[in-house]
Image 1 (cartoon, rainbow, N blue to C red):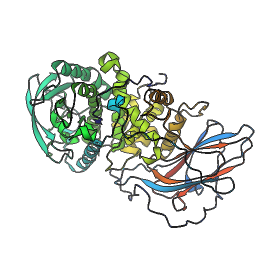
Image 2 (image 1 turned 180 degrees about the horizontal axis):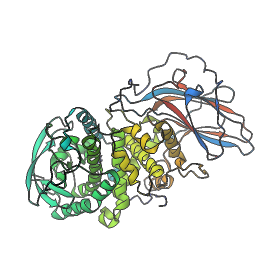
Image 3 (image 1 turned 90 degrees about the horizontal axis):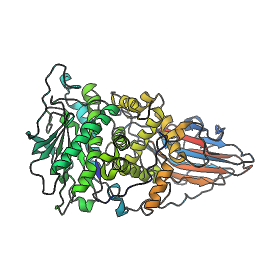
Amino acid sequence: MTRNRSVSTLVFLGLALACGGEPTDPDPGGGPPPPGPPAPGPISACSQSTDVGLQPGGHVVVDPAANSGCVRFPAADAGGAEYLYVALATNGRESQAGSSVGYEIRGTPVATASVAPLAGQRLAPALDPTLGKFGGPKTKEAFHALLRSRERMLSASAPVPAFNRGVTAAGSVVVPPIVGHERTFKVCSTSQCSGFVDVTATARHVGPKGAIYVDNTVPQGGYTVADIAQVGSLFDNYLYPIDTTSFGRESDLDNNGVVVVLLTDQVNELSGACNSLGSVILGYFFGNDLLPGQNGSNGGEVFYGLVPDPNDADCTISRDYAIDLLAPTFIHEFQHMISFNQHVLVRGGFSEDTWLNEGLSHYAEELGGRQIPDAACTGGDCFTQFAGADAQNAYEYLTDVESHFLVEPIPSSGTLEERGANWLFVRWLVDHFGADATGAAFTRALVATSRLGTDNVAAVTGVPFSTLAPEWQLANFLDNLPGFAPASPRLQYESWNFRATYASFHEQAPTSFPREYPLVPDSSLTGDFARTGVLRAGSGPHVVLVRPAQGGSVTFQLTDEARRAIGASVAVPRIGIARIR
């Protein structure tokens, strides 16, 4: 888990709530599409158009293989009409390059003409200093993506003896550590975790659920005894119950009855010159620790966190900054530990796909913000402390949806935008498939399985990912859209009012949040439209088509970038359409 190293804080007063195995398919390729042939021929005939016969509030998901990518919007009546059109790739199998395909969308009432996208201001590269930990480049996200990728390789090849699977065997005697206990840990020595260094540390807190060890050689200006007691109590009383209720149980390979946290400046060292890079590795979990016998394995349940180092000129970490982000790091990394246990140790499968694994860990942060009493959090505001960064990551994704994956490629650096997409999709799933306000039974079902990624999601929801992803993308624009009354609840988020949330962000920090709502679709008032680009797994362009009173019919066609049929692409393109009015 990483954050920008600035220590300033902005209380987001407008965080608005609503009531209440490795793929074997051919690699489809990713990134920008190859150049198409020069002067492509005319668009193919739309003799098989799908008629969009929707009432206001209705929606449909269309397979372009069934109609040459053609959809026809009927002539409008005296009241006019307005539609949202979304195209995206829905092959959610993880691969090295990611699933993507070049596209062209052309719309015409009579003839095709180009319409430029609506102008939109991009987020500034350096966000407002008042935004502190919620802003800035996050180059060290690559470290966590690397760990998830290495866990996948380990879970496929490392021996997992049956006696390692699950929690402590019945009848065995659990022997927890005591305060003052000293032990030596293996810790990643580089940001590639290509080697390990020994760290000797002493237990400073031992509670019923967690034991916190602090490196014996931490720098001056570090955590106080009260700091460790406070976060230890928070883990025992809130973070552990939230994670285990929502995701399942951890293992107990080392038979000590507790989850161990090591706080060490060796984690700080992984960030390098964070003052200039603008990115800090706050902590991590690595499944290697749950595979005894592997090089560098600690043979038990351990995750890691940084320590204050206010005098380091290259990577200055103040005590306030470290304390503010310690608890969100704990709840995030503990979900990864539970997931590895449930997928790999208990069921002998592969570790979860990175996009869903990260989405669930960021959702764990949000749960902390919702369920922990404000009195236990920094500034008396748990929601900002735990979920504020997730809301900002989502803003950055929604600002340019088409440019980012939901299901990112295996070697992805784990960009902020991808993390925002991962969290948003899990949040939307819980809203619509969770049986109660917390969605705990639903999220436990996503973790307690050997299924992975989109196959896992489809099995637990009972709905194909090729339907879920377009509906989610429709909801990303339609959520709380004034005047829109959805016929299906899936066209909204039930737990957030994102329009109110982002309007508040914009009011507080307009430089950093230049739009009141980040997702601004292209639009056409005439029906003439043309756009080219790339459909990435889970993502694609949004277009609003406005028809005047008595306006004639309009046909939109989705093809590949060379105007060939796109329906057979391994990227599995889909079109989502909703009638706004």
